[in-house]
Structure formats: C-alpha cells, structure tokens
Amino acid sequence: MIPFLDLGAAYRELSAEIDAAVARVLASGWYIGGAEVNEFENAWAAYVEAQHCVGVGNGLDALILSLRACDIGPGDAVIVPSNTYIATWLAISAVGATIIPVEPDPATHNIDPARIEAAITPQTRAILPVHLYGQPADMDAILEIARRHSLKVIEDAAQCHGARYKGQRIGAHGDVVCWSFYPGKNLGALGDGGAITTNDPAIAARIRRLGNYGSDQKYVNIERGTNSRLDPIQAAVLGVKLGHLDNWTARRREIAAAYSEALADTGLVLPHVPNWAEPAWHLYVVRSKDRDAMQKRLSKAEVGSLIHYPIPPHMQQAYEDLQIASDAFPLARQLAQEVISLPIGPQMDSDAQARVIDALV
Ligand SMILES: *Cc1c(COP(=O)(O)O)cnc(C)c1O
Image (cartoon, rainbow, N blue to C red):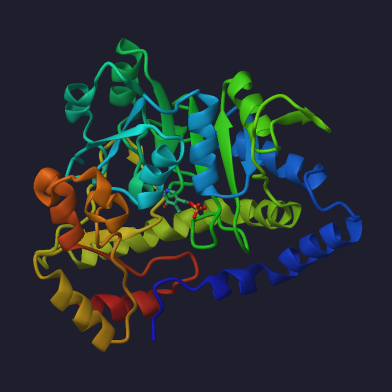
C-alpha cells in the first residue's frame, strides 16, 4: 500500500533529534510558553522573512485571533475564497462577521483577484486569501485592491510553509499571516499548533494578549481573550523539523516535477505554476472529469489519494442557514467534483512514485 502521506516516516527520519528535544522540555520543568516557544517564534519569523511571530494553539485560532486583532466582528464583512478548506470560513463566522465568497482562478485554484473588486461592499473590512495547496495567491494584485479600499489583508498560509511569491517568502505580505502546524502540514507538529507572523508590532502584541486571556501581565486582564498558545513541546519539535524544511520542500518539488512530466499526456489537468510562484507543494492536485473512476483505479492499485475538498463550504450543512444556492459558486462546485490529490511527501521514494504513475498512465 502506498499511503497518501506517511507521518510516521517523517518522525523516524528525525527520531533521535525529536526525542532529545522532547526530553529537554520534559526535564526543563517549564510547560507553558518560555524559552522553547520564544526560540521557535524567532526562528519561524526569520524563516518566513517577517519581523514578528506569535505562537497560538492551532491554525483556526490563528485566523480567529487575527480577525479579532483587526477589530473585525459583527456588522463587518470579509472577502474569502469560495474554494478553500472550511476553516477559513469558520474563522469569519466565529467573530460574527459576514462571509463574502469570491470564486477562484481555475488555473491556480486560488482567489481570482479580478473578481474581488466587484464583491466589495461598504461593510467590507478585509480580504482573506488562502495559499491553497501550497501555491501562493497573487499577493500584489490583492494588496493593490486592499490599499485602494483601505482593507486589511489576512493570509491563510496553513498550506504554504516555505513558499515564495516573487522571490519573497510568504510570511508578511499582508497585515497578518496565519499558520497551522497540524501534523499533516509541510511543517507539522506532533499534535496541534499554529502561529501568526506579521511586520506590525501592534498586531503581534494584540494577538499575544488575546491568546493569553487578554492579559499582558499576569492577573491583569485588559480585554476578554481566550486560551490559545503554542505548546513548548510542540515548539521544540517544530524547531527540529524547521531545520529540515528546505530539504523536504526540495524533495516535494522533485516529486511534483516528476508527476508533471510523467502525466503530461494523460489528459489530466495538471497544476499550473505562475512564473512568480515558488509553491511549497503541500498537495499535488490534478483535475479529471472522471475523477471518481480515477480514484477507484488508484485504490485498486493500492495507492492512497484524497479529495481536497469534496464539498465546498457554501454547500456544507454547516452553512445551510446562509441559504446560498449550490450553483452560486459554480467554479468552486466544479473543482470539488474534479480535483484529486496524489501522494506527495518528503519521505516518498521514486519507486513508490513510479507505482502511482503506473496506475495512471
Ligand atoms: C489546516 C488548515 C487550517 C486549519 O488549521 P488547524 O491547525 O487544523 O486549525 C486552516 N486553513 C487551511 C487552508 C488549512 O489547510
């Protein structure tokens, strides 16, 4: 069986280093915040070319706290891709703001900047692009629209650790950038974890306070915050893995290139990489009109595959009350019917990839 992603293999590759890092935290007697978290925050900020990093509990919290730090709440509206993982929408719902979905550019699967302006209303306060599948969204076009309309830009970077846009790492193009370290992400913890990065010291300080009960100083609470902090054990593990991320991304890039070469004549729609993008290749997503048959063929050949995502947020029961017609966002709906993600991961070897390709050509 070729798994879609083998998290155990990533651990085995680094087990000596990871075990030592975990043991160090256990022996330290310090289990919330502290040096391990500070060190990782500094390392992650430097890696993504941002001035500040604040660790939080998970990627969804990073999004929610970022919206709160920008004072976005009831009565405000946020522009978000129609084609994304539901977490991006749920963050907007969680702060009580209105979701304004915008369709993707089907070539990149990311929000289509040409469709954003028409969606802006007097209530709109922010644009929340997602760097889906590890492909950077077109940030210059998005930032230009945001500047003209005085909108905040909050990036969902949960899938694009290490990606570059026009040579600069994703990490501080917008006002605040939200990261998830869920185990399956390109930089994944051994449990939940998340962070925000930003060049704005006020936003960083506000998010740190909001995630720590609204407190900057023990037992002095400035506002009604929550508890969302990056765990020191996870920070230590992430610090170890960060040292290997560039190599792992390079390996993902090789796998992606090999798929693109081998599948060129299959009639599948392969990932399109604009010339300004250096993707992180979180996922290698192809499109097929015969997607379901293709997935059956793969599973017969004992090859794991996944659909990212089978139901777009506007068609989920969770958003039934918004009464959005299922054909209101036809591109999101069509992509949900056609996309399939092939196995990709830094520990996948060429023999395994050859078996995936054999099942498809
Ligand atoms: C994983 C993911 C999230 C949520 O991250 P968690 O750490 O699981 O809360 C948000 N947005 C996108 C696009 C994701 O892929």
